[in-house]
Amino acid sequence: MTQPTDASARRWSDHQVEQLIGRLLQIGVLLAAVVVLVGGVWLLLQHGGTRADYSVFAGEPAMLRSLTGIVRGVAAHDSRALVQAGLVLLILTPVARVALTLVAFVIQRDRVYIVVTAIVLALLLYGLVYGRA
Amino acid sequence: MTTLTLALFVVGGSFCAGMLGSLTGLGGGIIIVPMLSLLFHVQLRYAIGASLVSVIATSSGAAAAYVREGFTNVRVGMLLEVATTAGALSGAAVSGLIPTSALAVLFGLVLLFSAYRSLQRREDHALLTTPDKWAARLRLDSTFPIAGGEQPYSVRRVPAGFALMYAAGILSALLGIGSGIVKVLAMDQTMRLPFKVSTTTSNFMIGVTAAASAGVYLHKGYIDPTLAFPVMIGVLAGALIGARILSGANTTRLRQLFTIVVVIMAVEMLYKGARGGI
Image (cartoon, rainbow over all chains, first blue to last red; front, side, top):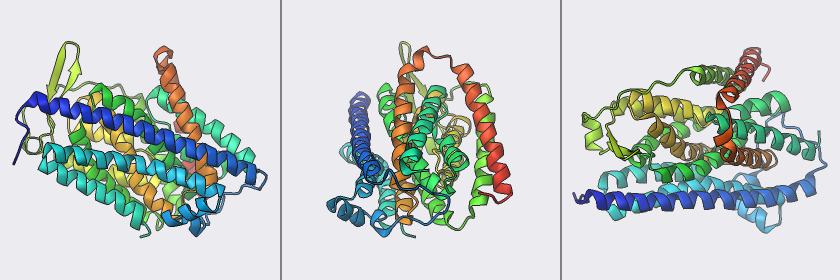
């Protein structure tokens, strides 16, 4: 197993990765918030006067439940789909963080943590893509 | 109530929850679901979906700041995320089978436990430096910055911590919360990590845990844009402003106030859940 031999070199590289991850998280959240805000204001302009009742759970319409449906909804200028797209961006932010950490462990050739991080990433993608179970 | 009125009320309430959560360091996510359910009569599953989204937003926003300080143990966090994401997927898979009244009772109990923990005085345990079998194999031991250098520490009881994290993941998915309390308990008490490392690593993990179940809930139709939008924007704005004014605030009073709010909500959730009125 190839281990980084120089502890200080590894530390520096860990540190750089952490800086990058911190920046990525901020950008992801900011981007998601802007999309959600724009979509939300648009949604209120369109549907602000309708009666709001969430006392009974009916589930969302199919369009707002799948990634392809949301993309199609945004293309069809649906304000709710735009909010939903922003929420998907938000959910993707931690996923991107894990993906970036995986790249970092690959560069460090840290086999144990390549496997650990790949499992986390697989579980996240499973929830996002096949989460109908 | 119209959609606009509801959105304005929910933004206001979520803003307060986010600010209180950030000022007290207890996280605002835990009072979003009771607020939506008890004040705005939102069905529990919609409330859980909206709350999870706000948990991802605040965790990712705060983690960005913490990671740079050098307290977060990325290896411990990533290893335990295997347990929390697996737990979150399990919780999200069975959530539909559990009646909302049972979820409300569970929520009430978790709120009571949180209130109890927030009143306890935190005692720093001695830092261990004797290596543990699992910690050595997985190279979990690390250092954290102190005045004038780096303090090394060792990690204990990795399998027990891992099991607790699986439970934290289930709880996070079932209730739409970050489960920061259970995560910190697992790292601080069971694995004997330094407290500051436990809290920052917990925050670092919360977003990933919540993202796992949020993906499932999106497909299940729990995440309503009209409801999730004011919750996310409100909590995020509240948390950001809370973090800005943190230095000048007297947090002891705020913690007491927060604890009282949590206890009242716990009693209502327990009562309504037990009567099947939720």
